[in-house]
Image 1 (cartoon, rainbow, N blue to C red):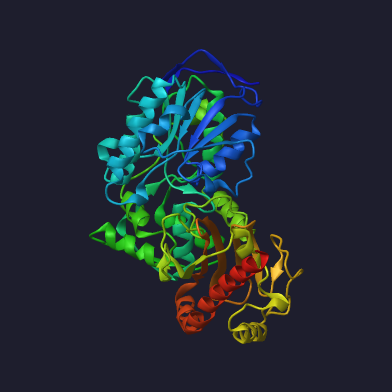
Image 2: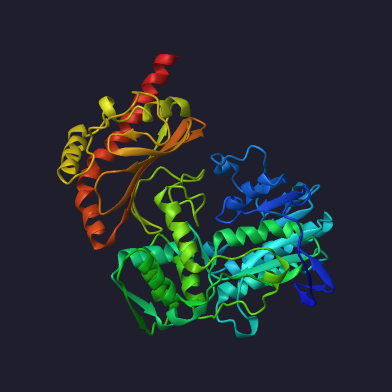
Length: 511
């Protein structure tokens, strides 16, 4: 252990005399509440807390969204933080609560919605005698705040601190990590556009921080029960947004020209981001608007109190790209590839959603989910694709002509599937028994493609959503998508209707 003289005030705590760095052993097990467990930060924080022996309780609006997470030791409590009745049992026995929710994508009234949720949460925590609330907010000086989004993040921090419960508020700028909204916005813009048109705010100073460093701060905070107030956290580099895009391009071996233009309204830049990246306008607009505000660490108290050594921007980018290349992204800013909700109708969708081009079909099936999922898992190989099979074979031949795998790989077993194994020119990316199958295309394409089947139980049997997703790589990707749409109009309705018919026929025979 290392000792050093120290005298300063940080995060509402007076530090003086000699402070001994705590050993690297974990804090004693605590009962911890995590909100936002289905989100980008919360979904990565929960397993870290479990690994350290803490008892973790997650409150989520829809527990089924956590079905695929390997957290058998986590306690899942259904509840909506906008409903006051949820708080009657959520805080029972809780020592520390992480507040990691926000409503930025909910539309123009997100600020008031976030403030009211935070006030209700703080009041309930106070009644339950919770020892501390830990919150991740945004950097920025309130007196110079030009971004409603950043102002709202700090307003939430003040709302959480409005009762007697001590609040430890970390404030961060851009978070760099695979799947984060800011990183995905930069990644897709730089990858897709050789010339980037950006608002003049692209030259504003920012101090990005890697996702691993953020999680290190959140986890280690449990070892400092006395720490509360505001702690500003940032990475090792202070850069402009232009610098971040240019550094990303250099790491990827790309040459990019960035032109800064006076854009009168952030809405215009938000629509530009919405068009060329997976980030929807509802999130892109406040992110672009926040670029006008300088977000750098002015108080280095966090570096003196916590043992975290933040990474540099380049290292954070390389780690994120490695995760993307390995298909091992733990969480993303949104569940773009999983959208079947309880209240959705049966209408088909063809168009664009959150930067992803899609062709979605929905059907109600008079058979249990297990019966339908069995039919889905038989697709490919010698079983064929149920509709336009000759077109699938033709696509395989064309793929082989340009050096791709084609359809020659077939499948290992006619009925059984495993994650990671090939199915013709697809590979199984996600598999949840009787619920979800997602195939990732490995054919030669000007972009990335997935074919997903999602099944939910229904009073009459089940509902199925079949979606072809395409993430285009520049203009060529868009041209490819619209060129193959006429074939989609024949193949995909026929396939989902055939799956429905097979499942219902098998159910009738079983009776």
